[in-house]
Length: 565
Image (tube, rainbow, N blue to C red; front, top):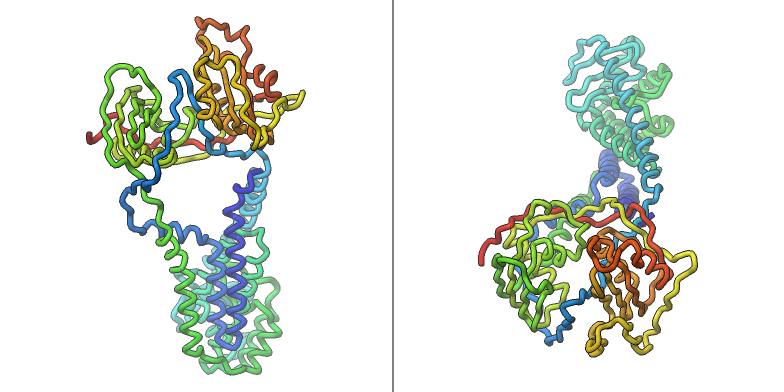
């Protein structure tokens, strides 16, 4: 399993856990202040699980000012390496996604889905039950800012509803409580409605449903309930209600509570009842927030939101690179040269849009989709840039050219495609890595005479040359297996996943029949050595068919007619 598959989730969980730890320290520092403040801090820590910092950074980056296309830095001119027209030189490719088709990610997703569905269904069924209770409850004529109802199914006073709260009272509670006790109980419930405690409880229940596997979210829920009830207790006492009557009212209500309070309803029970009664009967002075603490809390709140946004603003995407001067014109007929011609800062290339896309985005033909409707027309590109521009910089310039002249738009996706895995054959690997200080190996016997002078120029590359109709010779000069993989992908027109475990640099060469050789080819692809056999015999490697993940370029839009000159 690729660790990158779970890396974003793991980073988000670590960030949210650290955020909750910071919230715990902050509530500890505010333990002598109002409980409503601590409840708000716990609520923010809970909501942090729903908002990855990376999302805020990405949002901030959307407002970063656009940068004009930049030019590559002027450096010393580097000598360009040119090969004969009959050669295709393969540069080291970017690594193909190495995720194997492991069942572990799907298993983890299935486990999470089961937990999410189970908890979500449980909340939903309980919500249906209490909604039915509210609908069947009898209305009460009480002078309150919210509707009041009573029902025998309600075991304790509670408030149900987020935007249109309803006060639910157990049937007969008016006879069980004295006037002062009932007044304190109703004051407690109205406090829940006034501060929107049901909304915060619903938000946290969603957090618990999504992150049910994280013990911290369940602990956060308990802390929120405790601080919420203490906050309402403080509000009841602050409104002049008698502490003894209020404590006796809670005990009388709990005496008739036979089951836990319903979810989606803030009730008078909950949290540590013994501690609450003791706090009500022996009230301590609740300190008002010192101006310095207010300023600190405000600064922390602003930093928690604006900090990631500022990072996003600062992390401007690199400016696109472009040619100093470029001309793109339709090319009639069939070109005599297909390779890009580069001399200093001058670049000339007659190619199709598909060829330019493959070069610009460093992909093989099987790694794109969406260009089947684009005609196979040729365009003559004549461009100028600084002589010291690297190959990677030139590729970026072609990306800008495609976007500006052909309105090219695309995005990347990872898809599963039918391909191959490259692994050691049963007899073992037959090639040995070349020491860094070893002299170059002799060129193979099929290498064209007169090309020996190119020995230094082709070091570090793989050359695929035509040795007859349908016959391809592969010559590797101190190259890696990653380069061999790209060569095989070009020959097979399919993705190849490296499972060899080989990390050195190698000299090797072999001939094989092209897998796409036409029937009229001089070498019969059925009787001639195939690519698979050549790999086993010469390198001790084998190709096996397998579905592999591939980084695909999904083309969203492209015009076949270039704009501008």
